[in-house]
Amino acid sequence: MFGWLRKKNPTSDLQKRYEALMREARDLQRGGDIVGYAAKMAEADAVRRELDALDIGSQGS
Image 1 (cartoon, rainbow, N blue to C red):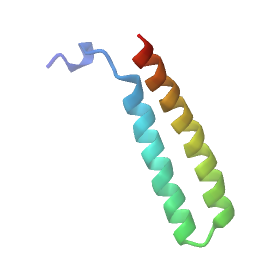
Image 2 (image 1 turned 135 degrees about the vertical axis):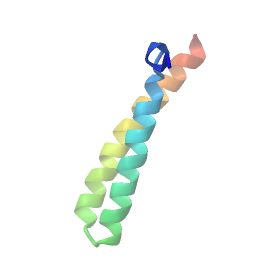
Image 3 (image 1 turned 180 degrees about the vertical axis):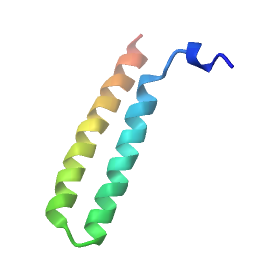
Image 4 (image 1 turned 180 degrees about the horizontal axis):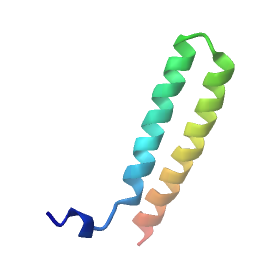
């Protein structure tokens, strides 16, 4: 009922985005689009780095 009052976890959105990018990359690779696969993997890597930075920041607190 009061779910909108809960503090949102910033990593959950990034994690979902990362997983979606990895699925898209997998599908591109299976379809033979290696250039598209490489581009999606680069996007996924950028999101993974953001997740790692947030994880490191939360451990230091």
